Image 1 (tube, rainbow, N blue to C red):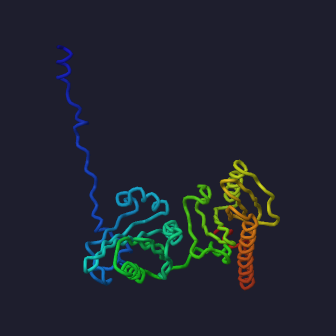
Image 2 (cartoon, rainbow, N blue to C red):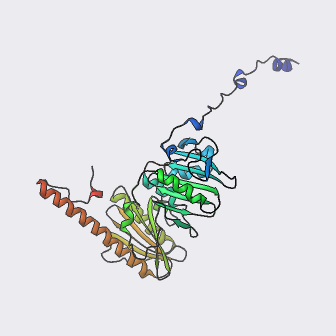
Amino acid sequence: MLALSACYGKKPDVRTATPKPRAEEISFTAIESPSLAFLPRQQEATPWRLEEDPIVIPGDRLANYLDQDAARFLHYGALDLTSGKYETVDGHGFATVEIFRFPDFVKSFGAYSIRKGPTIKYLPIQNESFATAHAIHLWRGPFYVRVTGQGEGDALVRLVSFVAARMPTAPGRPGVFTFFPEKLRIPNSERYSADSGFGQTYLGNSFQASFNVDNDLIDGLIIPTADTKAATQILNAYRGLYAANGKLLDPIPNLGEDNFTAEDQYLGRAVGFRIDRFVIAFNGYKDRQHLVDLAITTDQRILGTIRKQLNTADERAGRSGERRDRRPAWAQRP
C-alpha cells in the first residue's frame, strides 16, 4: 500500500505533456522565382489553360514534392522548382509543367541529360529537348523543364515550345565536349553525371559521350579535376579496379602524361589517361584498338586546344609587352 500510495502521489512529468510546436506552414503560391515568368497564364498557350495558381518549391523543400527523386535534383544543386497544372479547353488533355532552376547551365544539363535513354525522340526545341511516351524534357541554360501529361496531336510540344520561347537565349553544351572526337560520336549522346561514371563513384562529375565504331558501342568520359594530384588519384583508382579484377595491358606510347590499358571479363576493355588536371577514359567490350584510336584523337584535340590558348596568350603578351603565364587558361590560378 505504501508503494501504491507513493506511485499515485507522484507528480506528472510536465515535459511529456507539453504539446510539440506545429510545423511552419508555407504558402508555395506566394514564393517568387524567375521561372514564374516562363509559365503561360490563363489561356495564353492554346489550347491549354492554367487550372490554378502555380507553386514554387524551394530546393530544401523538394522532398515534400518529389519524394525519393528529390535527392538526385539536390545532388545537382537545384535552387527551386516552379510547377503549373494545365488542361485543354475541351477537357481532353492535361499536363504539368515543372521548371527546375539550377546555379548554372552545367548542373541543369546534368539533371536533364541523365533522363536520356535509348528509345527517345529528339525535338527541334533549343537548346536540347526530347520526348518519351508521356513526357517532354527540355534543357535551356540553367533551367530543366519537364512536362508530363497527355494531349491530342502535338499539344504537349506546343506547350513546351511556348515555355521555351519565353526563356532567354542560352549557351550550348559545356565546352568540355569539344575535346571528344566528333566523328563516330552518337548524336545527342552527351551527358553530365555528378554521381558516377562507368558505374564507379570516383568517376563522377564527368562529361560523358557514346561512340559507334563499326557497330562497336563505346562510352567515353572526361573529368576536369581541381589539380593534377586529384587527377592522378582518380586515374590510379580506375587502374587499380582493373588490376584487382582483370589484367593490365601495355600502356600506349606518348598518350597523355600517364596512361593504362586493361581488360576484364565483366568490366570490359578500358583505356585511361591523364593530361594535366584532366582524366579521360574509354570503355567498351569489343576491339581494343577502337578504344586506343578514340583516346589518341581526344589527346590530340586537347593538346590542340592548349596550343591555341598558348598562342593567344603569346599574342596578347606581345601587344602589351607583359610576360604571361604560359600555362593554358584552365591550368592557371586566378
